[in-house]
Amino acid sequence: MSGPYDLIVIGSGPGGYVCAIRASQLGMKVAIVEKRNTHGGTCLNVGCIPSKALLHASHAFDEAKSHFSKMGISVSPQLDLEQMQAFKAEGVKGNVDGVAFLLKKNKVDHYHGTGKILGAGKVGVTFINGETETLDARFIVIATGSDVAQLPGITIDETAIVSSTGALELTSVPRKLLVIGAGVIGLELGSVWRRLGADVTIVEYLDRILPGMDADVAKSFQRILEKQGFTFRLGSKVTSATVQGDGVAATVEPAAGGAVETLGADVVLVAIGRVPYTDGLGLVEAGISLDGRKRIVVDTHFQTSVMGVYAIGDVIAGPMLAHKAEDEGVAVAEILSGQAGHVNYDVIPSVIYTSPEVATVGKTEEELKAAGIAYTSGKFPFLANGRAKVNRTTEGFVKVLADSTTDRVLGVHIIGPNASELIAEAAVIMEFGGSAEDLARTCHAHPTLSEAVKEAALSVATRAIHM
Ligand code: FAD
Ligand code: NAI
Image (tube, rainbow, N blue to C red):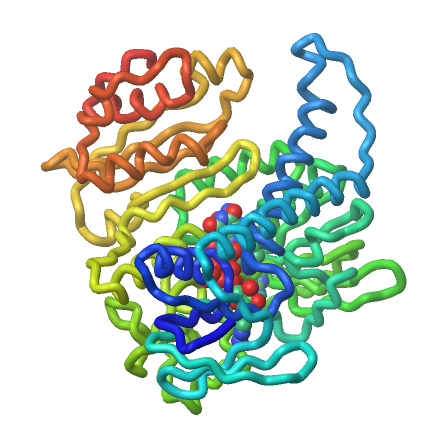
């Protein structure tokens, strides 16, 4: 290993490692500094990847338990949670090893230690054994991600009161799981433990689940989850949670204040959002500005208030999503190489990997109304889709929102089977400025779930065939 470098990236999550690889592809001499022992950041180690492994495995268990018999398959599934956790760990290892391989293949030097900005072009690294080294570079990219948001008065011990990290590591199925926050983590990890047998109650401060998501979708989704056995306490807040014996006692009251109730649970999951992670980076001393939500302020080229220092991913504004961080990583590497790197923030898909899945891209109806944009909505239920019918996965719908004047697709919202994959064609049509008619006139294979997307697009012009 040696310097000086063209680029030093701090943090090897999806933002950082992708940035490092792209910069190396473009001919830069690159180093990455990561304080974990493994690469891949939150996403690969304690986020996207382990949660999807448990969602996949718990879904398979639920299918075997509840749905195989109607297909003529008789089984009596038994849960071996230790093996399920081992399945998850193996998937995580495969992914983090894959990133290490890619960094090596792209000749990115890596330093496992905590990075600190010592000024423009200078990064100090403190290794686990306490030794330090100073690295020099023309450019620095901060990609340090985010951390769990804490709830005042509630101490996360990752055993009885857990964040997503502890909820991914439980060694037994809680009889009662109390989740604070009906956001993405609450619904995904609530689904995992619900399918494995937990009684799940979700306490949400607002009077709806999934704030920011299309309200029509959120409402339908809540009904579907209630049918699966979820209990929602909307418009409520947890004011304390205390470990008592083998369980936790949590006090809940209306969001606006009022009568206090105590709920007992075996495990409480705190899932009220995430906050940018900038601890120990030396930002203030380096003169790097933060906004009111402690996010690093960047310009349209991802440059911070200090020349030569850039930031991407969860640590800056925007949705906290792995693919958003990746796209920013590519864009900043291209900008630093003199190319025109760019991220289209209007077309960033977002997925909730529950069953059914929820996937969305572009504007919601509420956003279009607030912006005074006239739109037409086309909706198609999976109940009328041949493939969904034969698979008996008919819950949900596709909704296409198109500009009333130009017919340009402005938003697509899906609840249903494989929504995570179906949303990709909506993103492509929107990236190319396509219309609902373009989507409707594209030949879709039969029988596929994607025909529901085509039919929803046809429905914008009130000419769906199968409804
Ligand atoms: P991170 O992935 O957080 O990586 C930052 C890295 O920087 C970390 O490895 C950290 O150790 C390192 N670091 C921090 N400070 C320093 C320092 N001073 N020196 C050296 N290294 C440092 N997003 C999706 O798109 N899809 C999903 O399905 C999804 N599922 C999720 C599930 C869970 C349970 C959670 C918690 C998150 C999930 N996310 C998902 C969000 C996703 O993980 C983040 O948006 C993504 O990881 C952000 O990438 P990043 O590169 O900005 O930061
Ligand atoms: P979130 O922002 O999605 O949801 C938090 C929820 O908690 C909101 O509904 C909010 O109103 C509620 N809340 C806040 N304070 C509360 C309080 N005191 N009492 C009760 N409810 C309260 O955050 P979440 O679920 O923690 O996820 C964090 C981030 O991780 C998200 O931004 C998301 O983008 C990312 N993520 C993405 C996934 C995906 O893409 N599939 C999966 C998991 C996480």
